[in-house]
Amino acid sequence: IFFNNKLSDWGNVAVQIISVIALCMVLGFILPKNIEYQKKNKKKSSQRSDIIMGIALMFAVAVTIWAGAYFLHDRKYYFISLLIIFEIILSFLISFEGRRPTERELVIIAVLCALGTAGRTAFYMLPQIKPVVAIVILSGVCFGGQVGFLVGAITMLISNILFGQGPWTPWQMFALGLIGLLSGLLFADGFLPRKKIWLSIFGFLSSIIIYGGIVNTASVLMVQGNPTFGMLISAYVIGFPFDLLLAASTAAFLWVLTDVTLSKLDRIKEKYGILK
Image (cartoon, rainbow, N blue to C red; front, side, top):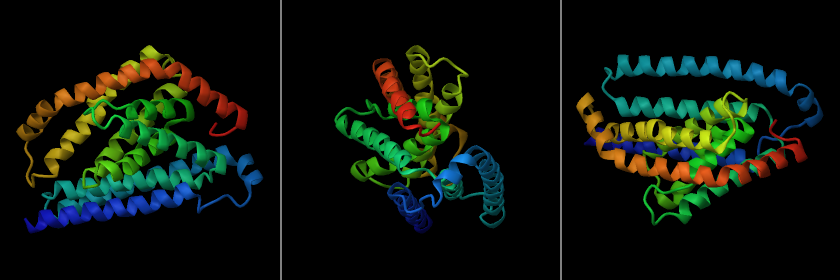
């Protein structure tokens, strides 16, 4: 019981650290000092920083797993998983700031996060029927996987101020951020058509497989020090009706919002020349 309490404390500390980092980035404390030079070298420096960040992330995750196996005897699954998720989220935030975004880019991302938070709050009385996943997917499709990840992670962080913070927050941030990242990778570069039928299918499957899979796994790790395969299966079975409801609502929101939302976001991107 004492160690479980300590895990909850670590989860709360991690949430607070992520909150401070996200707040600093949204407020734009790290602003470009030479915008013209940054624009000329944007693509090259961005690729270099992404490679460096990817190598650093793989090293950090490997060290975390090794430390958990060596020092904690490979038994503190939740604590190690929480550290890995924190490292992944932090790497994306640092990579984005390393690109030195402009004020207009920060405003667009802040507005998208606000829309996701407002959408989740507006439907609070309907369990799992939320447009937040749809908004994150559309953000990734229009502005790329990095922005999709940030919108998903920050939206979950901010909206949980109303729904309740806890050790589940990093898991939700990672799950929704991962959906935004994949939407950018699959759709924004033309790998799949940017049509509402494909986006609706992607939203349906990602809500069940990615979000449901990660959150259901977290529900087991948060309460069990020694999880088993049977516990995971039970969590998936119990959570499947809620995952199915979220998936169906996400597909419905994408079917309604895709055409008008993407046209507006594309117009903003072209008009101001941002997030290309």
